[in-house]
Amino acid sequence: MTGRLRVGVIGLGMAAAPHAQSLVDLNDEVEVAAVFSPSPERRTAFGARYGFPVADSIDAIFRDRSIAAVIVLTPPSSHLDLVRQAAEAGKHVLLEKPLEITPERSLELVDTAERAGIRLGVVLQLRFRKSIEAVRRALDDGKLGEIVSVSVRLNNWRPQSYYDQAGRGTRARDGGGVLLTQAIHTLDQMIALVGLPGEVTGYATTSKAHRMETEDVAHAAMRFANGAIGAISATTAAYPGFPDAIDILGTKASARLDPSGALISLLDGTEQTVSDDTRGNGVGADPMAFSNDNHRAVLADFVAALREGRDPKVSGREALKAHRLIDAILRSSESGSRVAV
Image (cartoon, rainbow, N blue to C red; front, side):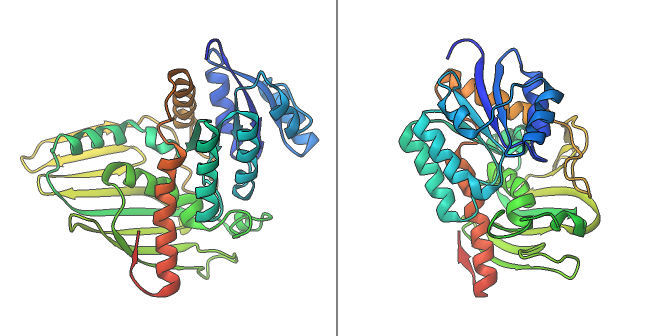
């Protein structure tokens, strides 16, 4: 690939703003050829706000041979069909999480992209935090020793008005509740650091805090292959919303990650701190109350991957890991038994 990458953007809802700002920030690398929403008013307003050309149909984007990649920001239930169209048109895809609404459709989506030879990147933007890289290096260098425990906590708040929006929190459109929509980011960070657990025992329910189809509270115990155990706690019923956290306890040190960064505390009394220098965290009533810093990093990596002929950092195959863990927790909750991941 030479010159600026020409992209089309499909879907201009709530999730589009940080992507649009990232496209503006990286306009020396990326050229927006067209943006599309089914709503003429929305696409006209969006195009005018960011200075992007507007397409009158999805087909117009897929037919344009000068467009090398599409950024798909539509509801999860539409992802498989759009990736099929992108594969047929030979266009690479940067896809907003989650992959799809069921494990089967998610796997088919990834297989479709791989068979067609197109690159698939997934927007799990918190993988790009500096703190994740720092803790990963510490783990690789043996600074934490052997892992003995891992815990993940996500205490978000969403008012009922959030779930009153058509399709929000339903199986048909979103595929799930707090695990697939919010906690997937925190779980993906955990997986990036310590991998998948071997088995989980989970509980998931719709609490009295919300009227919705899927779960707004989920807890799970997990066991890893090396014998380490851990816990997952996720909810959107924690008013007014609290910072998420990942704790990794080792025989030589402990590491804690929260939205501000990471703290690595060694047994010899020394500490290493890493700041992520990002603004906002989206844990409260406004889920978009955060900066676009990590989204910009996702886009930059996607462009670099196409130039270098490699998979993006969070490929479709990599994103499947979080889907496998979430599916195992929900299956355990339904069956009342321990489930292998």
